[in-house]
Image (cartoon, rainbow, N blue to C red; front, side, top):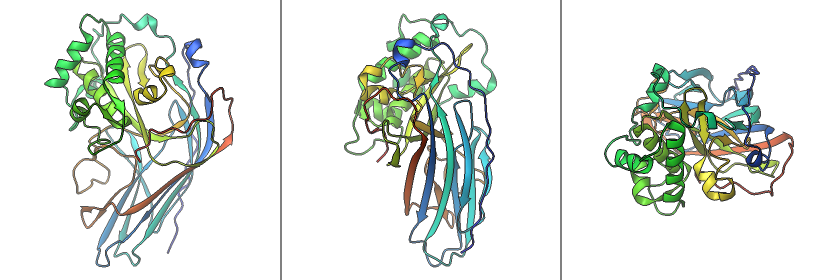
Length: 349
């Protein structure tokens, strides 16, 4: 079995921190976290008569909040770098023709530096009325997604919970509080994890996907652009180990501040950080993609993807999900920590 390696280049980007809310930020744990991250999948039970196996693997990339070096990408077929045009999400794409083995293993190895991302004290923007026309690429985030509607019941709820509130920041804060109090973090039963805003609204529970999908629906219904981010969490206070599943959060747009992050499910699990997670997210994570209803490149034969953090695979044009997934990390330098070690539980599993 041949092995191909793709060597990524480090892109160091400047990070501009706005004034921090000192009382809350002082309670956060690591403000910069440096770690190795390994993303491994093994396809299993590939049909003996398969003609073509197509594999899309999301790839973490550098931005203002994280510096990513892709040290190695290997698998049984050539891995080609591509991206999702609408969102800029990076991918590795591979094709296996007439596979000789029922299994196929792909591994991506990274060095990552992640920074705490904070908009700090944006009190001066609280009364901004959002009157200026939005840039086209920002206005896109007012549109509905398949599971993220902006009308009907969602619009009614959004109006009820922002009545008498002025400006996008105050409205977003009111909607943040509504989701925080209306939902509980609970992965019992079925239906959770799809990011179905109406389901979350009715079921009143779910995981991070459900919390933030509901928030995004409500924000967009109030003409506040909002978007979905997804990646992986790192346990706070643990310096190496396995990561059981994904974590997601949201951002809303404010003219003059840009994208403002919120992590409502983390706030729900750590109520003392309710204020912190409105406008700030910690360094204990890595982002892999943004957006919903994704059309990949090359285009998949199946429908648009709800979101992308795990690999997407097709065998002869049909979605294929028989695979083993392993994600692991190892800190390269332990940062200052002011919190008691606590495993994060926002994973999808």
